[in-house]
Length: 59
Image (cartoon, rainbow, N blue to C red; front, side, top):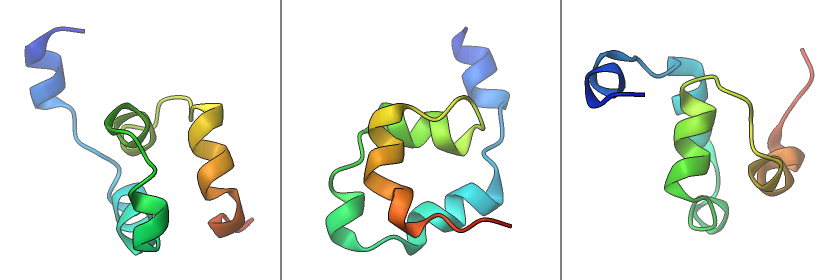
């Protein structure tokens, strides 16, 4: 992915809101790469899933 692609992509607002709603202790454990993958709706890394699974609700 080029720098231009990164600058034109828009994060999923619902996913951004979800990350912001997490407790500070959880947010401190999330890496930048994990957050980016989650916000831009790519496949969620297993490491991130393990950190947030208790906060995910089924729709």
